[in-house]
Length: 175
Image (cartoon, rainbow, N blue to C red; front, side, top):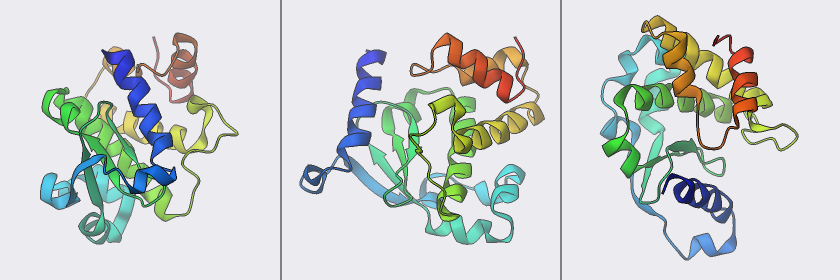
């Protein structure tokens, strides 16, 4: 089932850019970030991402809840945080928190005009991903997570074991 969900996740990321996506609504509903994620403006890691603009950014950040699998990502066509309802309901709460931190770094990058999905790079070599993972690993360490637990967090269906090792080395997580 996880491979099917990963396929659908990737398919819908491409699909959302097609003309057909205007006719088919793949989202369950859209919220303001604060409607769904309470008190994130008080989280030190979040305040360090956005600085004095934290409340303004989070007040204006839209969250699209979706029915298909996957986790979460930033829609680079509109800057919305897209989140799988299944992941929110069944995912590990610590992983969800770390993913939110990771994606909020991408929100900042989006607001700064960076190309989030630069195809010149593989996923684990993409500067925007390295920046987001480096920041997330820093937060994971602040929370007291071991390298083993952080490595478990970094491991996903779309990263090969070779790429995982390269990513871990780049963000200074040791086996």
